[in-house]
Structures are given as C-alpha cells and as structure tokens.
Length: 414
Image (tube, rainbow, N blue to C red; front, side, top):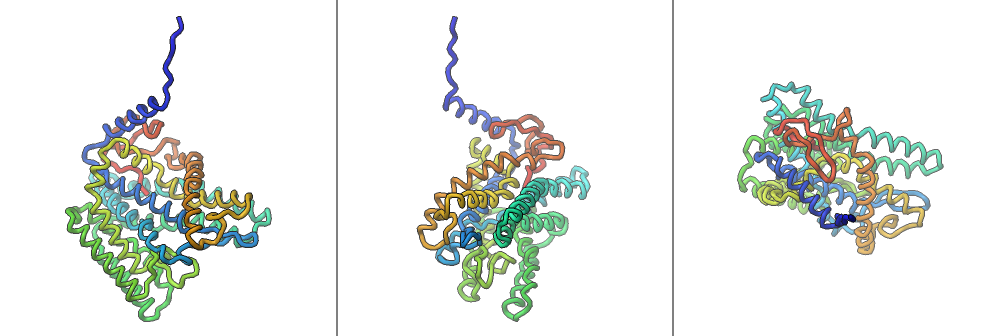
C-alpha cells in the first residue's frame, strides 16, 4: 500500500520556528530583564548600519580612500545621532558587569576567574579577524596593490578593536567603577576639553577621554544595577539634559554636529570622544532607560525574544566582521568597474539612494562571514556559547545550544 507523506512546506517550517521560539521563551527565567538584551541588540544593529551608511571607499586612479557623505552633505548629521549607539553598549556593559561581579562574589567566584571568563568572551573571536587580514594584507602587497589602499583597508577592518580594548579596561576596573558616581568621569572629560579647546592645550590630552568618556555610561550602568535609575524621572532627566547641553555645545561652542568622525574635519567628536559626544551619550542612555518597559513588553513575544537571543549569541562575530563585509563587497565590485554607491564619491542624494540599495548585499556577505566564523565565539572546547537559561538543550535559530552555566549568570555580552 502506498502511503503519501504531506510535504513540510512553508507552513511546517513556520510551525517549527515558532515551536523553537516558544521553548526558548519557556526556559527563560522570570526574573531576567529582557530589556537589557534588547538594548544590546539595538546597539549592535545601530553600529553596523551606521558604519555601512557613512563609510565610503572611493576608487580613484586604482586606489581606494575613505570618504563620508557627512563631509559633502552635512545636513545628514542626524543619521549619526540615530546610529552612533556606543553609549548604549557601555550602559548595558556597565549594568551587566556590575551585576555579574556581584553574582560571582555571592557564589564565591574569585575576581580573577570572573574577569578571565568575560575577557575570553570578548577576545576569543579576534584571532580569526587578525589572521585573515594578516594573510590578506600580505597577498595584496605581493600582488602590487598600492600601500595606501592596503593601509586604508586594514585600518577600517581593525577599527572595531579599539572598542574592545576600552571595554576590556573598563570591565577590569568594574570593582572600582561600580562605586564611582558618573559625575566624576564626566568632570574629567569637561576639564580635558576645557584645556584642549579653551586654553590651547596639547591635543594628545584628548586621549584621556577615550577611557573617561566611555566610563560615564559604564558607571551609569552600574548605577542602574544599584537601583538608582528606576522610574522614568532619571530617564527624562538624562535625555532632556544631555540633549540640551549637546545642542548648546554644537551651536555655541563650535563642536561638530556629527557624532561620528568625518574624514578631513578639524575636530572629531568620536576620535577621541569630546564633551559633546559624552553628553549626547547621556541623552541616548536616557532614551534607553525610558524604553525599558516597552522593550520588556515587546520581548514577551517568543519570536522577538528568540531573535534577540540569537543576536546576542553572535554579537562579537557581527561586530568584528561587519566592516570586512563592507570591504569584501567593495573589492569584489571593482571587477565590474566603479559602481554607484560603492566606489563613487559620496556626493548628492543619488549616492545615498544607491548606498541604501547595497545594504542587503552587505548583510548577505556578513551572513557568510557569520557562518564561517561564528564558532570563534565558542569556548576552547568547541562548545557553543552559554545562554542564561537552565541546563538543558535549547533550540536557537535552528540549532541546539548546549547550556552549561547557572540560570542567573549572564548571556555572553560584548
């Protein structure tokens, strides 16, 4: 007798995905603040899209050099206000680090072991990026590629690493920063800028802000853990105050309106961070705090929560490889000749429209990088990264994640 088996089809696949999402939702501890994970995912998306939108590699006589649409079209500066989300990273990072350190101390875990685990999560995927670009750089130079082009590519590819170094330094200082009021590092940034811009001091002094500037949202995150930022008053105060001071600094003190660096500009708000970048970051932190309740409600949906968990499990891979995806697309596209929005100068709305059309291609190439290198986020034993759920196998995005950590320990964070 012939037995017909109905095809699985799209409906079956949809049910399977929904079932996996429901299982993941069911094993999430009730006391987990899902807004923290959602804010981190938003921060990752902001950084990636921001870089893809404002970073241009222009082909000029066989050479590639960097440019930015913010230079020729300064009215696009609000794009940087939306997608420069580093303050949210550091806010969440400070919250998670302070909470995780407190949890480790309660379980009797030594500081050295706690720090070692966190730094391993940060730096484990870095080796693959460094190795690939070492080989690629040597190959490009041996093939006769212009040294300036190679320098441009390597600088862009490795630019995310500065973030990891600063984040690692602040993480290591968590026992101290968890007790520091955010006004102290903010005062350091204020005085550094006063000396640099007001008194004609040395420009190298600005690099003090590389740590002090990002310590402001990091210590805010620690204050969140202590319960000092509950309620909406703190969020509105940070949002309103930060936005007002930033506007005054831009309009009255001559700070750039763009919150990211613009090639050729005399002052960058980001490299190193200025007082305007830090006050703008305070406004972003205020907005993030105001979004907490809405995000918590939104993350009650199993599918939305599964997407956020998946993004967090691959956070470092996405962060480290998104610039490589941009450059791989640009280099491959050169075989077809200069292409609008990819190799042309970022001037006019035509370039903006063309660049938006390239975003799905960048995402596809990043997906290839993710598939090839996501295992670098696994531990040295080859296991997938742990999640914050009880010890059991949990289907995530079509695969099974082995869980080995207690329910209250945090998900892998950037």
